[in-house]
Image 1 (tube, rainbow, N blue to C red):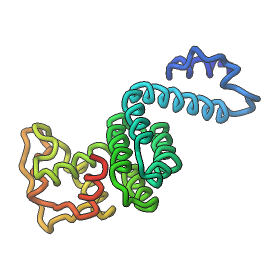
Image 2 (tube, helix red, strand yellow):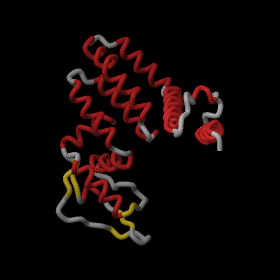
Image 3 (tube, rainbow, N blue to C red):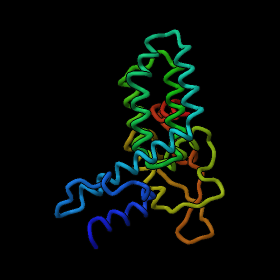
Image 4 (tube, rainbow, N blue to C red):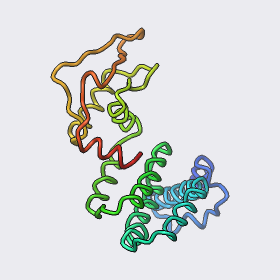
Length: 210
């Protein structure tokens, strides 16, 4: 298959078939790496524009709050530091479900006058590292509610989540683990507050993004 045909096929698969081939391809040589990189950039920009459109009302609300904010230090922090990071995360984040936590973080930054940039970088670094299922795990610990209620999850996935969160300093695992057998083989259900506890850092993180 010729290079242009390959590019056209890929664009159709990812929904970019309205772009001209010339917009995506420049000096195609022996491999398709430059083409793939260009397509990936277009995918990210398309996703960013879709997310910005979805968040139009929220972004206008943030803008209004900044315009009415009397603390210039907070204004500068949001305009020059937090909001550019927010846009970058909108561009790069794989999970749409995590966008609400990014939005909540911006509101927290506006509401709290004492946050410094190092604190914000740490929070966003933690958010980058976590998947939604892991954030939901932490929330279940804060609320002392069952995790993924009415669902079952494999033992291996649970162990992976726990080890990862403990490594990040967000939970402390108990010495013994109690599993409640579920109907399906190799699955479990459990109340996480019975076996682990969330650390102060974990609570601070959840408070920030909620």
